[in-house]
Image 1: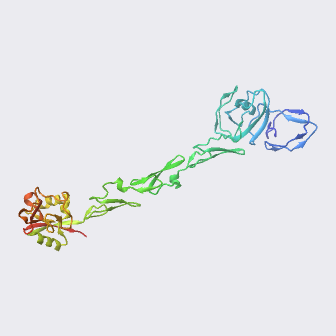
Image 2: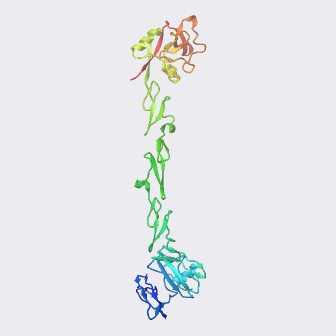
Image 3: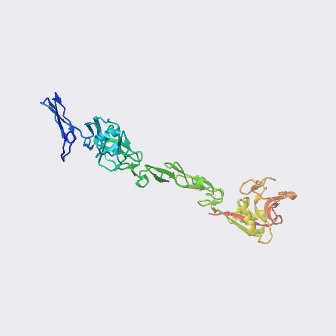
Length: 380
């Protein structure tokens, strides 16, 4: 058994007698420990058979093969299943010539399959799984089929896979889903996408970044988020709208102003006094805003009896320098004067109104003339 010719089930073998040696070194082989001893009357040895199988229980085994081994069963290529003939497999692998000799073979874990081939005049077969394997390469030359970039490592009588990050299992064939296990480092506003052996992070809609860090991006992603020219500001988790005067609401969608049409004709000063008495003033913002102004004209003024309407516009503070009563200077963009107006006809036209005869375009009129008025109030 120590020589590897038989196992616990017994068997036949040849014994050869020779001259004694001065010393015999003990070893451990095939589960049997031999002692170190000195010269005896004679030496005996066992001849390795061509049919001896390579199913060692120790990681390294040294044997002497006879010559002429050819026809015995061999399965595998470079890595052979343990039921194969050691000596014939050695010829197949190129580790031994046909005339026999000393060889060393190494134990490995069994494989799920072995591929046959023809090499050095020996044809090996293909076969299925076997508990043990052997080869004629060093023990640190690993043969285990590690998947997903796992690294094969050899130990004493064993081979194992050291798995790369993101995989596990004997052969590293099991993917670890970092997304469901919670072991990813994606940002709280990112989506984790599992991949084989790893994962990816993608920032959610309205956020930007590499997935590990995501910043709000509501404003750039939604250019019309804040209405009426409100200014959008990203915050740590969302966004805010900074609204222009006369607008409010989360998206500046609510108008803070209403307009009241005065139903009794008055001069400009009395009309302004009336508007102030109801908590407002003559219209300014609504007159600068073309959309609001045109809406009032189309929906209120045109259906009403013919009249002109005072607004909060004059050059009373300085002749020829027109401004709104809230202090906003007149420009071509915030007024709608009729062609040729204001003309200060008769040197007494210092107050502005929407003049009926000019299709409700702006005109300068005498502040003492009577007309209706458009009052404007800021809502609470």
